[in-house]
Image (tube, rainbow, N blue to C red; front, side):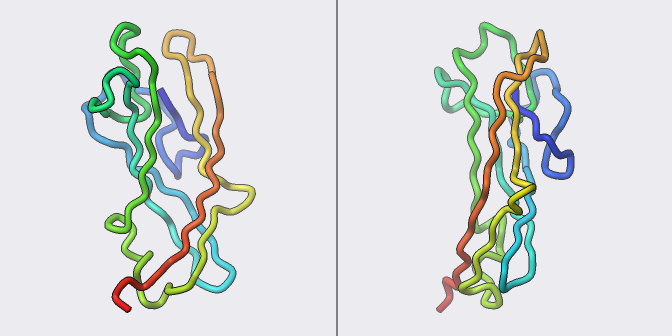
Length: 130
């Protein structure tokens, strides 16, 4: 299962099994020329041997359920309408250098941290209506 390091960005506690819905993460973004934004990231936990099965990133499942867990992160314009807002056209938004989206992989029975990833997000906003 996967947890974020910052509870303002996503789950910091594990759950058993989950209900099959995605996890919505949030991450702050800054810009040198535009107002700061928060990006919504849709996150899924899935299995390499069952790629169509998706569930919350912080959900653990039985050891024989999954070959290997895989984390999927998706950023869409539909969830982040500000990306195409005319006021943001040409703006570049980035994760703060000291506050990237940080996600840790854990083993269920030992709660041992297996790995840590730091995602530095960068979005170049456009105005698609131009």
